[in-house]
Amino acid sequence: MTLTRRATLTGLASLPLLSAPSLLLARSTFRDNDPVNFGARGPSTFPVHGIDAARFQGQMDWKQVRRQGIRFAWLKATEGGDLLDPEFKANWRAAKRARVPVGAYHFYYFCTDPDTQAKWFIKNVPRLRGGMPPVLDLEWNPFSPTCTLRPPAAEVRRVANRFIKIIERHYQTRVVVYTAPDFWERNDVARLKRDFWLRSTANHVEQRYRVKGWRFWQYTATGVLDGIEKEVDLNCFNGSEAQWKQWRKSRGVG
Image (cartoon, rainbow, N blue to C red; front, top):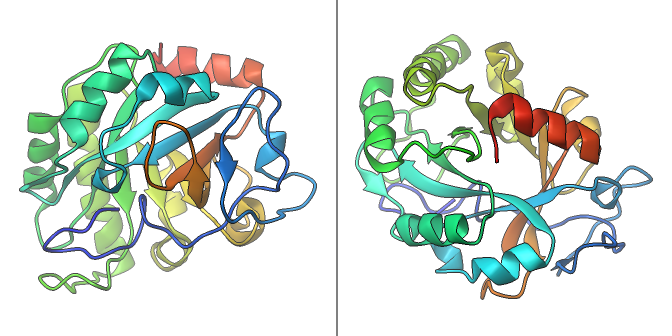
């Protein structure tokens, strides 16, 4: 999550610390500055890992990122109805050139209607054949100076579904929903019935959410890679290499 005039820091690019066990994947060279031991089925037991990033990471050397075993990436594109991440376009182009499957995420702002926000995302994020699906980032932002609104759970799901409907119609693929534990619990986010990308940096994702049907796990905000000057979020895919291949095929990811 990026600092904007609305948001200080919660979410995708600036989460609380912690991460995978100190074990690293055999084919990967990235590491974690503040690792957590999640137990026998921690992130290091999953073969497919990726990153998410925003303006805090600046412009990245995507060829180096790819060489270190990163298999996918999501970049912050938009927030609300008028904010565009200043590093999005440069990193989007560079990730494509490096052949890293890349997608974009939108940070939802509860003081702007879903139609306006969906149109803003569509205006700034091109259709990309072979790219990762678009992501809707749903979480509270307690630091926003302009919007402190926290709608009831039914309203949260209504506006989320409206945003999702517009985005899915335009990009012709199902949206991935990202969220954090408090938001998941308060708003019964499971009822959105999408692929879920879940933040859990201090406990195993299945312990924190009591769910096994997750698709991606954001397990740290303190990842370190050559080619990225700042710490970066690390994520893993819930499945084997064969399952990753199958999921990519089903979603049209190159």
